[in-house]
Length: 141
Image 1 (spheres, rainbow, N blue to C red):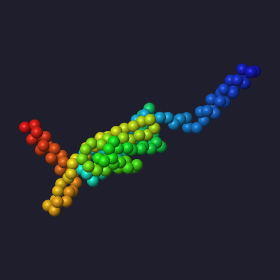
Image 2: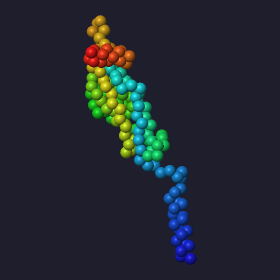
Image 3: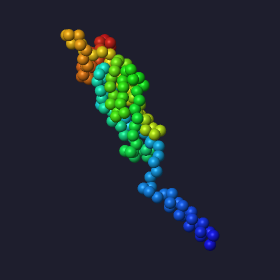
Image 4: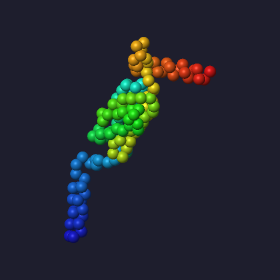
């Protein structure tokens, strides 16, 4: 009789501990972090997209990410994941959720286009790509 009581007590304890939806919150396994582009001119902004996944690869929509910049003097990032280029250089943006983190590195070009009145305007990505193709060809010749 004592054995039966012990077995029933253990069964009841196991049942009570496993009540709910059967999934326990656990550490996230990874963060997939993406940017529409990683080359910018000062003043330009891009919106990051991200997904937090658990160790099994399931999307954890309830987990939020926090963002930091390796150099806020070069690129800043808001809590909503908006990256803004400040001045020329390289900055790495890190997203963290639980024990997982993901990174994306941005290259911010010096200056921008100068108008006839001397005002500086940001270059478009197409303009920068064209400039890089010309410079790469010139340097390889």
